[in-house]
Length: 152
Image 1 (cartoon, rainbow, N blue to C red):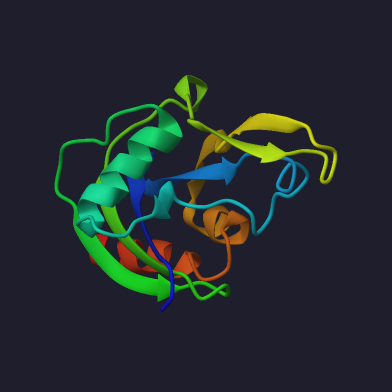
Image 2 (image 1 turned 180 degrees about the vertical axis):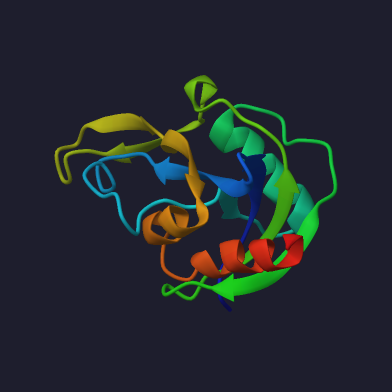
């Protein structure tokens, strides 16, 4: 059975266009990756309502409470790794300078016996539609397209 993930696609209007908030995964594997590495704030869930999981993950990865507002359900996507991503769009604002992500611990360097902590998310940034789709993990760009289609 594929793993399930849930996340929020935060958006705002800026000078007549739509921008979306994306986060960059932390840790040594993602350190030097940019295009195709960014994602919506999301995470895995099991015995939890998907929207509640998406809101929890937003808080864990950004350090900010998810916004109040109208949550727009988006069509679930399947990533290359087989994970199913459930997502909701919601209008709001977030200052990337206030990013305060939770951390994870891994052995680094591999087989060194040393455990190190890294932020789950090391950066957050607002992007316009086209740039966002270039920056996002494969398949997630469909979420941006669907959001724009629903708002037009």
